[in-house]
Figure (cartoon, helix red, strand yellow):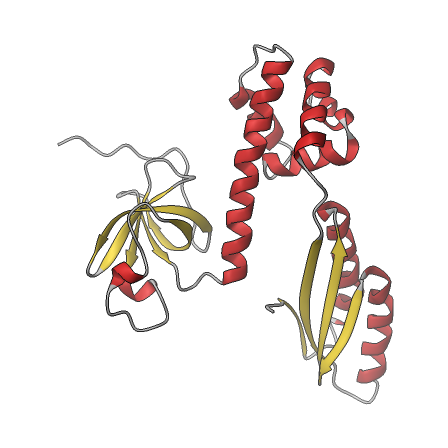
Length: 258
């Protein structure tokens, strides 16, 4: 019997992954983890939906591509136990959108290499990019904002950088990004309310919307088209509020779901 080859990359518990359903059975389904060649996922029927399931084929089908959460991973078998019901709609949307943007970014890089008549390999350039960025799409956004200078900083030739900038500017359009988070905060004592007001006044400089929802509950909103700069404002707003962490009975930011 041939020993199954150990995957070069492995998923970790709690990770959200793109999967493709390869087999559907009465008690569950088997899937391929798209980003982890050689790794299969087992989806028990109880993890398909929080609703009662009469026929699993009403929920999953062979060839279906979706987002799952890794519950645990068996390195020896190369199999991950996965769940669909523990993935929110917002998480599913964001991961699928990122997946589409990563495919598009790689295609743009391939086209730039052809236009520049470069003999470099996409894989080599992508590896170089990933040494500084979480993913290739983030790099493309920097090229969109900063032009070919961002590509040249990564060591790409002026000719390739110029080709990449032209393609990125033509392929991407600034997209409106709206990020909302619920803030739950409780500070006991006579000065608790005043301390919260002071912290929120400082945080207000970095948000586009701050609304009182109920006792100890606030809604913060950021609006823009540049995630990188928005992230800085989000971090600054949270830092202002987190100055109360030592005196707060509760201080928690939670992703808002409309």
